[in-house]
Image (cartoon, rainbow, N blue to C red):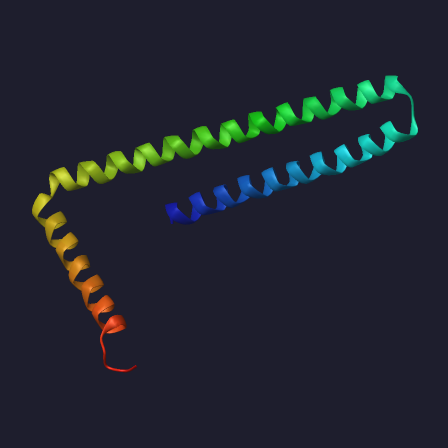
Length: 114
């Protein structure tokens, strides 16, 4: 259930980021169109507005990256702790996965003609 909540939050963050980037592109197009039609004062204002939006987007991406890195580190620490607490079970699980992978690959690449 916690995984579902995490996925929903991640999906929401992606949706917000995509929406924000879409707004930036739309605004940039409008600003460039306006710059073509009007004088240099409006060009400077358009450039300033576009710069502000780019910085906002960079900040959003940096926050998302920080959260991702934090979650990844936390997950690695949990996995490390589980392996250290249960080394033989971890070894058995790893060996079992290798056997399954080997059987799958053997079936895929064997010369049975299938």
